[in-house]
Length: 69
Image (cartoon, rainbow, N blue to C red; front, side):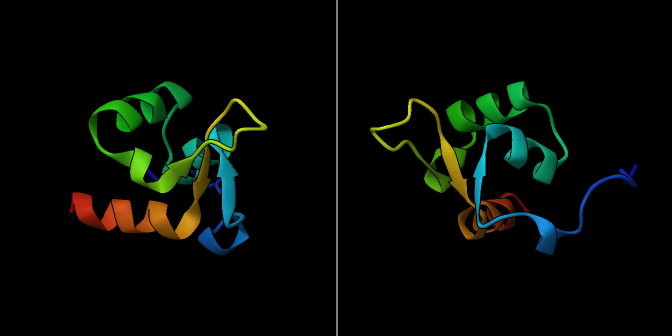
């Protein structure tokens, strides 16, 4: 089922935090955690030393999605 409230892909920023990438993927933040641990979403993420949280690069998230298909 398509979420009609979801922004179009071009409205999402190139650098996303966990909440934003969860919205982008249409999943919960806990699902993003599972993808990080088990499905190599970590290849699309980085954690700047100044911040203690992951950020995701949109182009790498898209590449990760392509690899799932």
